[in-house]
Image (tube, rainbow, N blue to C red; front, side, top):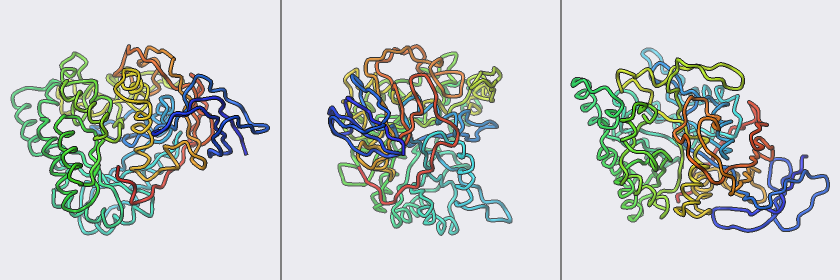
Length: 479
């Protein structure tokens, strides 16, 4: 059994900050204390550094088909990028196979098996959520089997009419089943009907530039849909998690529902803290196309308030990258890579693949903009990045903790390192970075996955297949 000893670091958890040594035996944390010793152990000196649990990103999309292309990170390249940013666990969304005439399809077991095969190249640990994009009696009977597979979350949509959206009645029925079997429902909240009308009107009027992506997805539609979702949670008693919150009114609605004891929680993403719909009016505005879209400065500010005061429990990424110009190859691990991307919508905003890179950026960006600038405490940072998602999604204390018996997913963080961030530092497999030229203070120095050193400074020591599938427990904590 391999033994490693991290000496003289400042351990940082969601609740405490203290000086200690940390002993790793095999894949688990064996002990935490002062002046620890272990004959034959490999020693890592963490003097002047912070030692924190590896990040848990509960919202990623790897190798996702969209608009005649595919998201440019797969379950190896995206995982590698995550690790360089300090994240050691990710959760991906499994698409539900559409029902086809004459046959019932593979069912949710078959859908998850497809994604398990895609993820055989995983470089860090991973779990899955199940998209629920059509619902009937057969699907209702299949949902409980998800728990046996360790998939304890359903995602539903109030947008993407005719493709992903479920009727409110079907969401209500699915949430009652979720409640019965201890699953958590995740909600993408936008007004699908309003979007359909506004998109058709925009195209008819010749409005095809990227800014119309935001103009046809109004903020009030997200607010209204979020409140509808919270009402369904109140009516079913089923917990609900609002994904990628992007507008001030959603924070208000979440606060309103939580104050009334409704079992609801929320997540935002870094892009909604820093960027606005004004970025879509830039010549390279397609880089900022995602759904839901960027909003306004006031929305940025209210979201910051929500994560600082605990109304919002998690910062995920919704990592779903595409090339800005897929006609121009990049070199990735010595190979020339070109994947069709946002140029597909050069003349029509509805054809721009929706999604952004972010899985590597999340922790370094939020440390500088949150902790260094005084918006968050270091302990809040760990809660938002790691501990809260581990608890909400049925992984704690295996993940998200520095405790004896927990997986030794550990980041040694250099709080004094200064970097100029951007695509040159990014391991995300795309040709741009949203944070190009940002000056950061604080960055991961070493990253361990279950006791294995996989990132050492700029060196990648991981490999495809190192990541393990994480079955998650049901009836997880509601924060």
